[in-house]
Image (cartoon, rainbow, N blue to C red; front, side):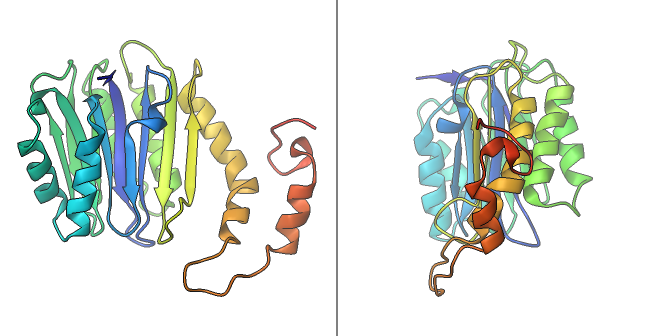
Length: 245
């Protein structure tokens, strides 16, 4: 079982109902292990001594009508090592819940608010989660991706993981079964900064393509000509640059 000493945010946008997780840690590929999202249901980050089934089962319970708090309580009751876990949950109505077991590596703790939960363990100190919460609460006019990215940056600036930095991820779902945004930095000396760079490029090059993708129950349309023409160009010559020619 892998211990992920991590800081993260799970959140819901009150305007779009999008749900997402943003997370960073000093272990490779955090985006493969911690964030779980079901569109229209909820978002979960499972961390410390990671048990992915806590997230999977919590989402299944929320799909059946449980609140974030109810789902979290039920999955922890079934886990013999609950004191080693840290979990943040938000449901489709923005109700949030979090758990930090007594066996998590200090500093460890969490904060919840309207539409979000922030949590972390093996951190430099409490300032990381406090900064993340303040950031999210103060950026309500922005879209969910930006609010979560700013929260992650605030947590990193306040100290983050006390061992250092290695990976980061942001995953957001709208109403479709596929992700609206799913970006990962699997190994990098400055993963949060690199995630910001990738997000800037994705806004210009990826999201216009995603916005043109088929929607369940809607007629499939053609990709907008401007987007098609942009993607025919070599990456360095597109808006935002990146890649190679």
